[in-house]
Image (cartoon, rainbow, N blue to C red):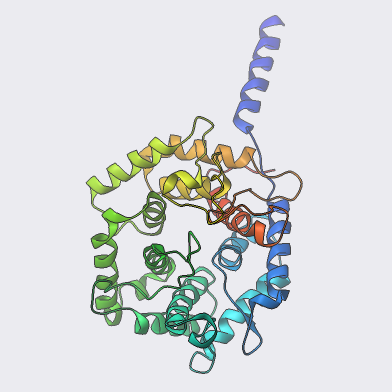
Length: 354
């Protein structure tokens, strides 16, 4: 009897340890849906032809992650906010020759029309590659992006990128991350498209740019590349990158965004120094590409599981650009991104949930 009781006790302890921390897909879905609904109704996000801007901080991570959540929750219908977001993208791709850029030279300064148009073309391709449904329209989005790819000059292979001096997506070094988004779109496209002879020269230019400019990039941009593609880096580069990522992992298993580059806030306040959802999610996604580093990615996943906000279902991250009120809509932008990417990391094989 005593042995049986002991075995039962040990079994209970082992089961509890295996269960570990859990996270709530339902709460994450509610947060993301609410934020997407707000963005779609916000006057500042509206564009011509009754569409909205695909923001890198809110709508992009939303549409990339929400389908994963729907499958996790066994949702039968796509939420209204997601339907609307995809409808806006498909409408703008369909009317590509008619819609105006998100930003114009007249209102935002010289070069902004070109930057905005090129940036949107890449984001449209990524959104539709991540949400397959209309192959013809997805190919049209890719065609529009390839047409705007820079073919000559120092940045050949990349795209003119939208710069408003706002890290991490609209800063001086964001052009590289934009190119990694296109690499990710390719990775998610059907195999027959990736190997289409018609885009062979474009893909070669893209990979050449990503390799050529790799050494000068922030660790953040390098992490996004590792997540996006395993076709660019050499074995030695991957080995060193993984070592650099692990060196930045904190004792609690997470990563801190501000430690992955050099950014100064415009208001001269100190950057946040704690582990955060955005950096941890990206590091986890990157390490999941490297099979021999599963222990580190599991620690990152464990941090994400344990640090979902119990009040609203999000993962907190703070602005690199200035100290913002985390309760304000603008102050939630980095948290929007963190939540979307955390979902992507946690819905990969091996994750746990409630």
